Length: 429
View 1 (cartoon, rainbow, N blue to C red):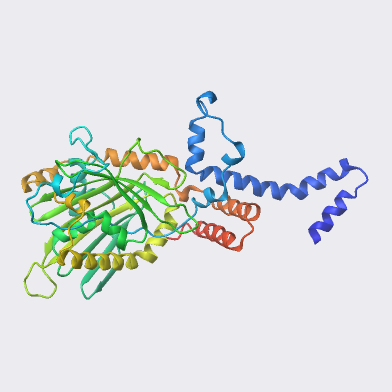
View 2 (tube, helix red, strand yellow):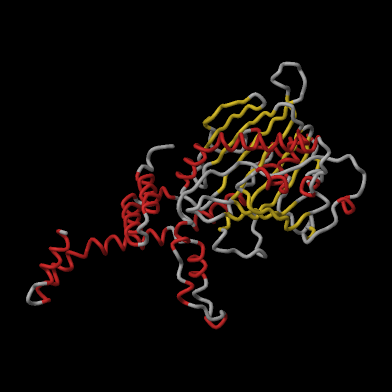
């Protein structure tokens, strides 16, 4: 009421020119808040804005007419920039049937095309070398910091984290599953059809291309995110190598221009989730190699501030691990009961064998991470790290956004929560 009274006193001046300076002082804070909001919106501009900027130099007559009102971005596109949840760590699978019938009879070719192993090598030996050095902890990255050590009656779990100078936080975990074979574990991770049953975050899974020679696959995933974030789309290249008694499974995000980008779901470009699988001795102490060890290495840029992503991972990691174990035991029962394996699981049986001598050679060669670093640099250029955003800018922009765009209490709580989290950036999670 005091502000309204002050405004009325200013407007009652006999001459508007005398009231103009006071009026400018009165509305200056509002304009400053709006300016902060515009700057924050520019820093965190969504994908559709980047596309529009890139297309400004193209003649307008190349495009059909567009309804201007319908093209204005809504608050949903802004909400896709806000924080969200944790990401489950792994990838997909199913086991081997001992039949000698050819794959074309067991699984007739569907709409997915075949990959030419020579011309479309989305996942190659360089990726195997990188994963092998991660397993040996000789990749030249920062030291791993332990963050979790838990276990159940049939599973033990340990997790580590590290933060490179560029790119999102990276995670390493070691899980030992009792009464489990490496082959069952390998197929479970590869089986997208079964993953849709146990992973409630996976909305869609589609095989785009595959190579019957070396087992390379290109798949598309759509993951569900909380209601205040748009869903995420992944275009993943994956392949398996076998060396000695260990499987090396590489899955990573790839560039696939023939699948167009959309505002929703939002494409995740930087994605890496790879693991090694081998048999180990059971903790029962009976000397039997009846347990399975999985070393997982994961990082991705989901398009949300990394500090908030770390918080989500820390809070939800153990729950995700238990969910994977539940799905694995369910899968094991189905396969043991005679349920036939899916086509995705069958593709896990088509893998490349590498000699131990070749693996030792890869160990002694220098890392060639140019492709990975380039991908991370592209992502960094498109969406700067939240650590580089000034606190005042974030807080001011959040206030402007909360007060001008939406009046709902829930939306304001989310926005102010983000602002408070960024204001404490200096504190490590």
